[in-house]
Structure formats: C-alpha cells, structure tokens
Image (cartoon, rainbow, N blue to C red; front, side, top):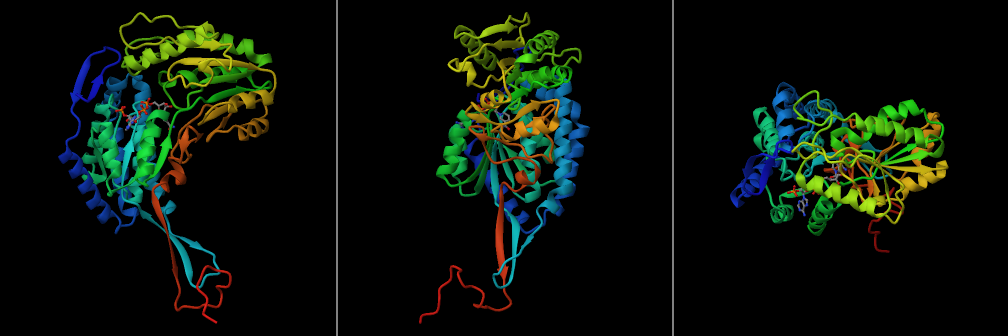
Length: 473
Ligand code: NAP
C-alpha cells in the first residue's frame, strides 16, 4: 500500500490507500481540462461566492478536520484548529480581493492604440504538498488559483492521505465544481507523467530540496511554469540592544511550534555576546516546560514528530553534531512514551565544519551561536545555501529593519514572531526555492499576463526605433 496514515502518537496503522490507477489519472486530467475550458470564459468574480462557501465549510467542520490532521501527523489539536481557521481566512481573502487583483491593467505606451495586460488562467496545475501543514499548504495554492480559474490536481504527502481526502471533500461538498481540486495518490513516476501531460500547465511544490529538485527537473524538461517552496535554516538574530524579556517570550515558540517542523522555524539563534548567557538560560527554562502527551489533549504542549522516520533522521543529525564537536546545552534525552517524541534540544558551539552548521534540522532542536558584532551576525545568517525567512530583534526597530534588509532571504520579521497571512507574500531565495505563494504575487504565479494592443487603424508614424519591418527604399 502506497499512502498510509500511521498515528505518530499511538503508532497504529489507521488506513492504507493504493496508488491511483491510470483511469483515475486520465479522468482527473480530462475533467480538469473541461473545467479550464469553462472557467476561461468566466470572470473571477463568479467564483468568489463558492470560495467563501469553502471557507464556511472549513469553519463548520473545524473539529473533524483538525482531528484528521492530528491523526495523520501528530500536531497539537489546538494548533490544528488554528490551521483550519487560517485556511478559512486565506479562502475568504482571495474570495474578497482576487477579482480586483486580477483586473486588466492599462499601459502607457507610445505604440499606436490602447495597450492593456489581461490576466487569463493558464490551465490545470499539479500541486505537490508536504505533511507539516496538511491543509494550509494546499490552501496557499488552491484559493488564489481557484479565483484565477486554474483547476488543480493534488499530490499530497504519502503520510497524510486522510487530510488530502478531507480537503478534497470540503471542496466537493461546496457548490464549486468537483474538478476544481482532485486528489490523486500518485507515486513519483506518476508525478513525472502527469507533469509531462500537455493538459498540465503549471506545477507548485512545497517540500524538501530533494523533492524540489526532482519535480523542478521534470517541470523544466517539459517547460512547465513552476514554483518551489523549499526548506530553510532561518536565523533568529538577537542584537546587543534587544529587549531580552521580549526575545525570550518568543524564541522558544519560534522553534517549538508544530513540534519544530516548520520551514520557517527559527533554526539558528544568533545572539550578541552580551545577551548570550541569559538567552541560553531562558531558552533551556522554556524548552523544559514542554509537556509530552496525547496531541488531542489540551494539556499537552509537546506533540510527537510526524513519523518514526523523521524522528530517526533528527536523532542521527543530533548525534553527528555532538560527535563532531557541538555542545549539548539541553535535552536529547529519550521521552518515556511510545509515540514519536523528541525532547526539545539545544546545541551550541557549532563550527562551520560541523554538518549541523549547514543542514536543516526539521524538529525541536535549536542551534545557538554567539557573535560579537552586528556584521558577524549578518555574515553568519547569510552563510547558508538556504534563504527562506528570519527574525531580527533590536531595541531600535529602524536598526532591526536595516539589518533585516541585509539578510539574504525572502522574508524577515523585525521584533516579532513570523506569521503567515494571505496578504503577505511567502517564499524564499537560494536553495529555498523560487516564486511566491499568497498575496498578489502568489495570485499571479500561474496567470497568462496577455498583452493586447488595439489600434483603430494601423499607423506607422510613431514606430521609429521599434522592431518593425521598414519599407523598402
Ligand atoms: P518532501 O520529501 O520533499 O515531500 C514533499 C512532497 O513532495 C510530498 O508530497 C512528497 O511525496 C513529494 N515528493 C518528494 N520527492 C518527490 C519526487 N522525487 N517526485 C515527486 N514527488 C516527490 O518534503 P518533506 O521532507 O516531507 O517536507 C519537509 C520539507 O518541506 C522541509 O525541508 C521543509 O522546510 C519544507 N517546507 C517548505 C515550506 C515552504 O513554504 N518553503 C513549507 C513547508 C515545508 P511523498 O510524501 O510521497 O514522498
């Protein structure tokens, strides 16, 4: 069986699903293409009501949707409910603003005639999504592209099939056309075949560098537009004038939210030497408060990781980091529960030749670095192949902003937790990928921005210097 829910708290195999058949794939492609041909004749506004309905259905079914996610990948129930609400907010935002953001744009030009850029849908998209935010990752692509008029096929992570089906059901229970979103349990070869199909016009992937390279290769070979939302080793910079009380209230959350399994989790804390000892002491204190247990229970504050495989990988990264010279400042003790728990852990004294210096650790492990100047903090933050997000804390917000603009990542928050909201663009640079999701940038990721220039009658007078054939002498 290909797709499988294994509850990471109980280790119970909940349900297994076979790979999609050729007939299912063909039917999904054909129905999506028919819908594209219908949608391209309609205006985005005509879909707004259906998207609001999807938001309403998510809110009405929040408890069940959240429990499905918890069973699939183990996150805390209250965090799961927050994720459902965020999905509803994203759907509402694009329902309210999508049509306006997709309006035709008039251009000033010396060309004869009226120039305008019209925004048309591209066609059917394939989205390939990860398990860490099983609904939010889908919604980031779904809501904007539903307004654009691009039908979507979903290939979700193999460990979150329950969530994939639950999201698809919400869409099918609404008055949106069934082919708006079709879940397919695809294997990797089938993903490549679907990308190669001429009816697919774009590919959106969120996931690891490894997955991203493979899917981007297939998309590139087939000349399909694509966006890549990949991993991060985000830094949390504490400048020497930062308010340490504010910093410590946020730092542990920035690492432990979603059991540390967030692309934009703060993975490297880069702390000015005057605040370093205080920072590490407080981080230990806050990490020690984590209460492992059933993620469905509201008293639990430390959730299991998503799978045994993920926990084993993190354990081997921590073991290797220590073996290669890192100091274990806190944690790394086994948790006495059968689920896939990993004790929050703090590593210090990580040198550039330690593999931990450059690897993404996708779980509750914080790396803390001591620096003696602002420039050293910036250089260290930028000494990474990845460039997703980051946080800067300073007593002077303007100084924080200046430092933020020197960080080579797609997103930086000053004096606050990183948040993801529909109006804010989300995405990275370097090996963290390319393209943006959400905001007007995400809405326009898979749009044919078609130029139309209309003259009442041809006029050659004002084309000097243009790329036009001149009359033979
Ligand atoms: P992953 O292994 O790359 O999986 C992500 C998705 O890609 C899954 O659906 C996976 O399918 C699929 N996939 C992987 N390799 C593939 C291939 N060769 N061909 C076709 N599909 C393939 O990522 P992960 O490790 O589960 O997710 C965690 C990573 O995602 C972290 O690095 C994290 O930082 C990153 N992430 C980035 C963002 C962002 O917005 N930038 C957000 C969240 C997570 P299977 O499950 O079947 O393998």
